[in-house]
Length: 159
Image 1 (cartoon, rainbow, N blue to C red):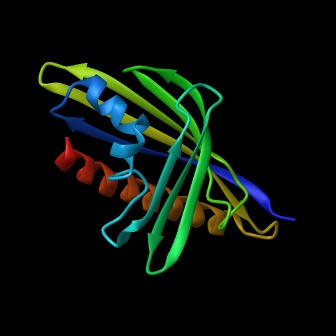
Image 2: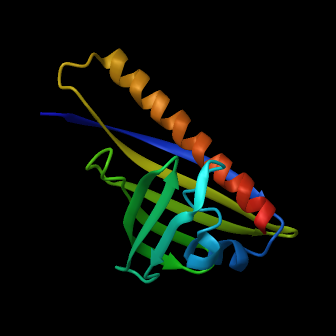
């Protein structure tokens, strides 16, 4: 039986766009398909985004890379346009765990600042040492922050 550990990844990004425009980029399927959970190696033809952007609504994002479909899904927990968005996230093909993502957008004179926190659940062997768990959490945090930074870099060019 696996044990669970938790870590928080955090990324902050400034946009020269209104808070409303940045917020809407998360919930508009046609726009989200261009940046959310995608990468430079993604196949645009195999990409699919389905969203029901309301509290309790669900979403599914399929990203195809090198012929393999990667499926992320979750449920919207809070929607407070244009300030706060909270949703769950999982990729069942890799793990049954469900993370929580909190997006907060703060208006600035010349745009806005977005702060994202992902509360990550990391399964591990029961016999893992505390050092092994610490290393796993550090690697997961780093990889998650790197992924969000790549997506936000792309979003910056789109906005």
